[in-house]
Image 1 (tube, rainbow, N blue to C red):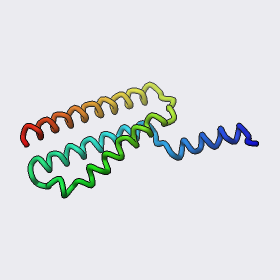
Image 2 (image 1 turned 90 degrees about the horizontal axis):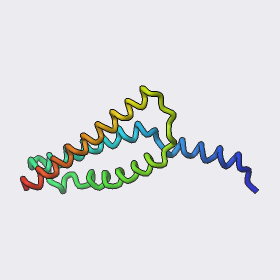
Image 3 (image 1 turned 180 degrees about the horizontal axis):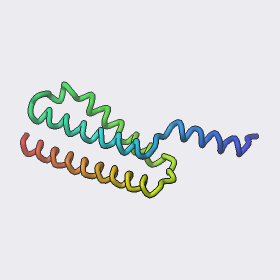
Length: 112
């Protein structure tokens, strides 16, 4: 027999341990996007070959879905108005970064 109160407490503790703050995850996404942009530009300008940095691309391809799951499963924070504005700004920066990455990808395809 299990105690429901213990199960609830255990699940709350595990979610705090396994899942990061949503704001932190958004910032990590932004870092990954700009790191990817830098890698693409390095390859495009022939300062490095894909073979030199392929492991970074592989790590990124694992981290992006992992961060997505962490963001979705994260415990929603009770945000004040100021924190809501900061989170909206962070999401805007993420969207802008993604748009920059798409432009760099197209530029690399046209150049290559």
